[in-house]
Length: 162
Length: 147
Image (tube, rainbow over all chains, first blue to last red; front, side):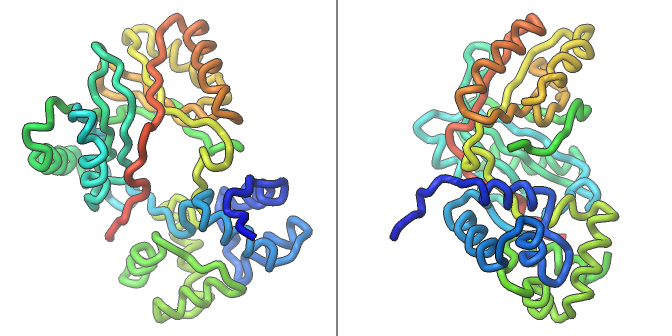
């Protein structure tokens, strides 16, 4: 039976809650989650595999803290490109190794003209600006305007609630 | 951080096994043993070289609403507005940025329909418009990060 569009049930949600802060650092992590939730290891593994295949889990692995690793610059670059080319350029920008997030978003003219967002990482602001210049070169005349917004302060940071 | 730490970060960003002894499998591929991999992951989490280790969930596919929102706030009002915005439990992250659009926050709601009503509440509370910039298309999320 094809159940790939099955929505999340109660046990899936409990698995999400139990693992969203991280996987247990023990030899048998899925067994530990299963015991915590009163189910079997096979059930937890099957459900996580399913969530991975359907994209509910983007990936499982290490999330580096770029700040601690010396990447002290990160700038939100925003671009005004023709709408009919936003997908093409979005994909190309997303393929760059120094970009962590790339999205197409709505414009709000006249105050906000940009439709493509890319988070650019570097050792410092200068390196971020060099990388932004590489994106600008790639876009050529289709880059009608761009800016880089650096964060000056974290006003709030909490985990995702579900 | 030594060579092995760097190899762990480089190799374990993309995927990690779903298996009975996943750390043993991953450790073998790195040429170390299971206990050492676990010990190194613990240390890198403690020292904040890793911000987390485990599954990364896709918020919208969990059934909730998610959007990036921006506001243009006069500097002398920034602290008050930031405080009012942050008081909404639906505001997950909020960053000040060096631009006339100076407040950028992520809204996470239990259902997609809730986004609009929370936005209106924020506008009423703060007295300033909220520019809603939900993603229309996603091209890449996650850094393939080489150390």
